[in-house]
Image (tube, rainbow, N blue to C red; front, side, top):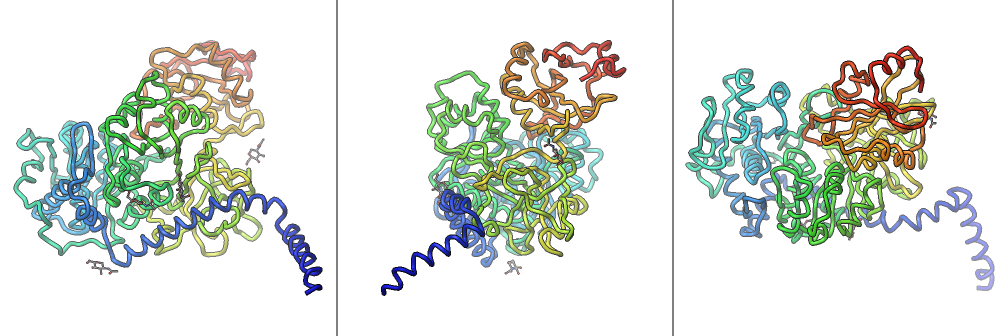
Amino acid sequence: MNWLVTVAPAVAVTLIAVLVTKVGWRWFYIAAVTSKRDLTALWAYIKLLRLTKRYERENLTIADIFQMQVKQNPNKYAIISETQQWTFRQLDEFSNRVANLFHAQGFRKGDVVGLLLENRAEFVGIWLGLSKIGVITPLINTNQRGPSLLHSITVAHCKSLIFGEGFKDAVEDVRNDIPADVPLYQFNNEANGEVIATARDMTTLLETVERRKVATTADRANHHDRLVYIYTSGTTGLPKAAVISHARYLFIAAGINYTMGFRQDDIFYTPLPLYHTAGGIMSMGQSVLFGSTVAIRKKFSASGYFADCVKFQATVGQYIGEMARYILATPASPNDRAHQVRLIFGNGLRPQIWPQFVERFNIPKVGEFYGATEGNANIMNNDSTVGAIGFVSRILPKVYPISILRADPDTGEPIRGTDGLCQLCEPNEPGVFIGKIVKGNSAREFLGYVDEKASAKKIVHDVFHKGDMAFLSGDLLVADERGYLFFKDRTGDTFRWKGENVSTSEVEAQVSNVAGYKDTVVYGVTIPHTEGRAGMAAIYDPNNEVNLEVFAEKLAKVLPTYARPQFLRFLTKIDMTGTFKLRKVDLQKEGFDPTTIKDTIYYQTPKGRYEMLTPEIYEKINAHELRF
Ligand SMILES: *[C@@H]1O[C@H](CO)[C@@H](O)[C@H](O)[C@H]1NC(C)=O
Ligand SMILES: *[C@@H]1O[C@H](CO)[C@@H](O)[C@H](O)[C@H]1NC(C)=O
Ligand SMILES: *[C@@H]1O[C@H](CO)[C@@H](O)[C@H](O)[C@H]1NC(C)=O
Ligand SMILES: *[C@@H]1O[C@H](CO)[C@@H](O)[C@H](O)[C@H]1NC(C)=O
């Protein structure tokens, strides 16, 4: 026994010494501060995989899972809004009617029927109903008009289109370009309303069909069949239709439920469009799949946000970063703190406004997530770490196969080592974010777009060993020492000025704050005879509220000289796509030429003041008489 007493400490010391030299002291510290976070997440992930695997084995569709909720809570509200209150049974019966009507109209499994409708209970009822007969529903962005609307219809190979009464004009504008054998169905909020000449009256037709059950079972879908298409708008080009299968819908909705700790008695509030993943799956999925109530709104209103939360008694609110900024810019109101919201979740809440937001609106918890609709790389920040969009485990890095790779910040192309493989970034080193693709695993699968060429561009091969594949997010992220991840920029959005790399999203956030939370985009423009790109900020200020002197003064306090915009452009009109994002590409192309741009443009003088950029000044810049 005696020898043990003397030997044991020696052995222990040697062991620790070996470990320390191998992994370093730092490792123990990191492990100590992050292991609880990582193990909780791992446990949630295992439970999530168990659930999705079980439903996969049972070959369940979204409608099958929804049916369980109907059975359990037929009279609970599934969807509520200013004008509607639908129970689970109502939603079920409406969707049965849709299934029966479209089956009677000749639609069969695998057919594609587009949907163009604003946020209302029937929106969910229609895609859910169509899915009951195996029909796939492209969810068309309601802001699309003309050529882009037509593109959305044709790229998805729609065999038919359902549109709401509010979209009559938009549809008539493109009617002649839609093949005549594509029938149109107009959905009116009331039966026997007016219908355009080339469409059928869906509302009236619906009244004539059976609502208690779906008459046919011949066209049942499989767990891995396509459910809906969701359009994603890249920074360039027309919208792409991303494929969402039943499995993927389940994975997204269950994934956020299991990581954020939602409860069935939570009431969710989302003013986000139901045709996107955030509103349509992450929020609405909590109703359809898990039996919670979801409150919706036709159109987002900044001043209406917390007023709605009070009215609907919401306990969970959804946001996107731009909305949070608009809400923060509203005048103080008693509703600011009169609500019962215990958690807000969403994407894009920038660190520059995060603390102000939670303080003013008394928000106990923020669940920020990151993940592309079409991608397989999803991460979440569940512990309110300010600014983090998720984490990767430092002690178990391989469990959840997402990584940050060294990459060219302009193209997002990974940088390869001498062995031809990609390289992982160190903590604090920005790189491109990827998710490893594993075929046949709904967590790791990449279903891509309807258009296969677009899919190929998003895949990188031979990542960690020959023959493997990963989804390239196109976003630059950086991890800190504890593995928390922070968004840096989109690839290609970083530009170089005076030898420094400028992150446009960082500058956007600061400029917007200083300008009073206004919509801002920042981009680099080239100046003749000058190296790199000069920063230019376009600020939406229709009422001329920005005082340039105060603006310049405040900006100098938050941004280094090289990052401050050399040019400012004040916009009075903006073309918002459905995503609340200004069209950066177009603005960048237009540059800073005051002879072609109608908006007022300012340039920064060497003293740091902003002065009007006149055609004379513009000449001088081009002639290199005025330098930056
Ligand atoms: C799932 O169900 C469908 C329709 O009932 C059937 O055709 C298919 O073979 C099933 N798939 C599996 C894997 O059980
Ligand atoms: C998320 O946070 C909640 C507390 O807010 C906790 O109960 C839950 O376990 C956490 N989930 C994960 C996956 O970390
Ligand atoms: C998922 O959602 C349901 C209903 O909202 C809830 O009852 C359940 O507890 C949630 N699961 C987790 C792991 O949070
Ligand atoms: C800017 O980015 C380039 C390309 O990644 C890199 O080589 C350079 O060191 C960076 N410069 C600074 C100042 O960070």
